[in-house]
Each structure stands twice: as C-alpha cells, then as structure tokens.
Length: 176
Image (cartoon, one colour):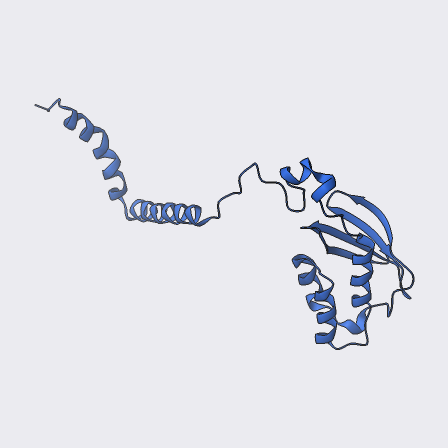
C-alpha cells in the first residue's frame, strides 16, 4: 500500500524526473552539460556591469541641473570645424613615420572605433599632405556633427561626436 503523505506524493512526482537522465549515458551527459552551461550563464549575468539609472542623462547631454540654469553655467559648445581641421591636419601627413603620425592622430582625438580602423594605415598612402582653407560644418545637431575639410588632395568629410563638451572624430571619408 502506498503512502498518501505529502512526502510520498512529492516523491512519486520527482522520482521519474530524477531517473530519466540515468536511463542512458547520452541523457546523463546532456543533463550535466546543460547544468554546467546554466551555471556559466548565471555567472556571466552576475558579472555584467549594472545598467546606469534611467534618470542619468546621455553622455554629452546637459544635466537636469545644468539645463535649468543653462544661460548661467553651461559651457559653450566648441566649434566642430576646429576639431575636424585639427584631425585632418594630423591625418594628412604622409611624410611622417608611423609613430609620429600616430602621435598626431591621437592628439586630434579619434574615437576608439576610428583608431582601430586606422590601425593598419600606412601614412605614406594618405592622399593629401596639408589642409587648405577652413573646415565647413555641413551639419550639427545635438552631440553629432559633420564637417568638410579641403586638402591639397581630396576633400575629407569628418564625422564628429560630442562627449563631455569635447569633439571626438568618429569617422572620416576622404573624397566624400
């Protein structure tokens, strides 16, 4: 006669689930791999950086306290044309060694993705040697801008991103 206690009923439900992986080596191995994967996923999830609170402003956007008194304390947005000109002047130097060229490029503030893209560039292959004239800002809205810089080679379109009131070069398109 079977026991009708809660413990007995619970065991009758759990026992087949526990026996199922033991019926073949493949099932057992699959369950073990599944458990290890689940533990790994949980560990990765716990190590992930916590999201910023929703009340924090975007990078480069004025803060709530700064927008309330924008006229008094907000720093003026720098000219993206000057940043574009500085970058193209550093880029258009095919006469420099790789180290010298990179020092100039890094001083002109490329963002990380552009720095990686330029990582294999040989300065001798740059199709310009100097900037001619001033940059023309084609578009500027919020924290993004696009400027055109004239060189002694092709015109260069420079895409910029404003972060903490500093323009960073996000991309360049020679001949663009």
